[in-house]
Image 1 (tube, each protein chain N blue to C red):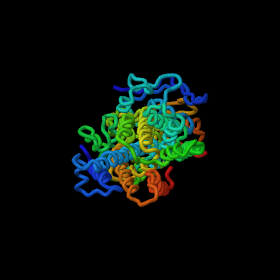
Image 2 (cartoon, rainbow over the protein chains, first blue to last red):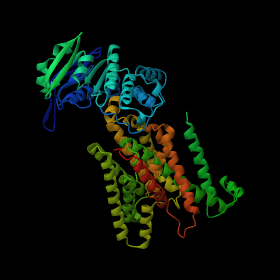
Image 3 (spheres, each protein chain N blue to C red):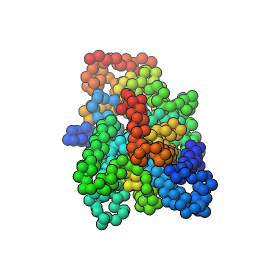
Image 4 (cartoon, rainbow over the protein chains, first blue to last red):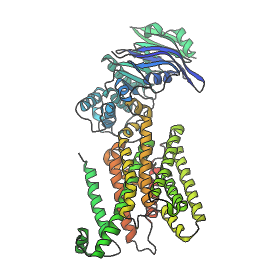
Length: 255
Length: 327
């Protein structure tokens, strides 16, 4: 089974330390939330794990391969990505965007065939986009476009998914929709790493929370074990109250 | 499988090139034209059709196709419908390269030096732009850099005109700057053809990644796109094709914007599937424009590049204005 591992990963950019000695393992069937203040290095950690940037020291591996230097097609078949910002340079239609998810399997837009067609159709249905198949991307709401990207990533059937603040700029229902889709994807056997700013969403959907601050991992573990008032104070410098009710955890906080 | 759009465009190509061979200052009835076309007409008619009009029409088509495909690919790479060899200064740099060889090369230069110099100029401009694209991020800034390159190449070309020793070199240089396919022979086309073919191959190889790039560079990377290779292929492809086009006809602007813009709605705005129809449409546009140039009763024949700019520049402004708010 493919595992993503970061070993002693440190990253310096122009002399500034961005990541400091990170160790992290991601497995299938687990949704890991990456939380921490702005500038903690969450996005950089994700980029190292995805192979988009190479660590200054240490190793980031996808399976047995070095993430940054491995074959791009092989990497795309193992790890999908949901961007924080969803630019659409051209008003392409939903179906064509989802079909790009099969890029690493040789499918171009609308030239998708056989297993590519099946995977695209399945991903479109799984994300509730059947009615939007022929819609142009520039006519979609932010929440709809976020779901289109989910379908695009799911269509690849990659064992891992990286989600970079996908809930940003979405309304509450849109945030829940997207995270539920990722949760279902993980329950179907994938592994996922999601950068989240909302502790309540992390508490609701994640199996494990990785707490970051100033380039380091401060703690990691299941929400019920690691969400505490003192941790929220340490990491975010807020005065928090943690509520436990019927097995669910919720957090309120103020400055 | 050939799409209906490409089939219709191919049909338009055949009709427009046939019309370009049939129509001209020497009026020729249909019977004489077809006799000349199939090699059984009068000698004079055959010279007009096969040695004057046909190479000229073919040159117009090839130049338009090269510019249409280069424009579509650059737009895909830079994710902006305003990117184009003319606007970005690629054509002007290529024309400058050709002018320098004509100006300083003298009679010792082999014929192939002109296309090579044009391609070197085009490659220098596209490489500079792509390097800037990696650094600046903002497409508006990038287009401004292109405008700067264009102005600078234009200034050096103006300097050469300024220093031209005699009226003959002045006329030569002017032709490169204004752009024309008049008096082109099959030999001129053959000289540029290998570079053109190589350019089309590189552009073709970059088609698929361009679709993925529409979703942003990070997403494209995660989909399995080799970003560096894609940039290099588009730069080489657009540089070779535009350079070869300029070697044939001089600098002709705006075809690279208008042709992709026209076909995009018919290919559902997919950058990969824009390339081929944009090339064919670019070719047809220039063949038709060249027929117009020959038919207009002006005291001196209008240069194709001048007409292309007169039509294309307002369209450029219109497309830019409609994109208000987009970066």
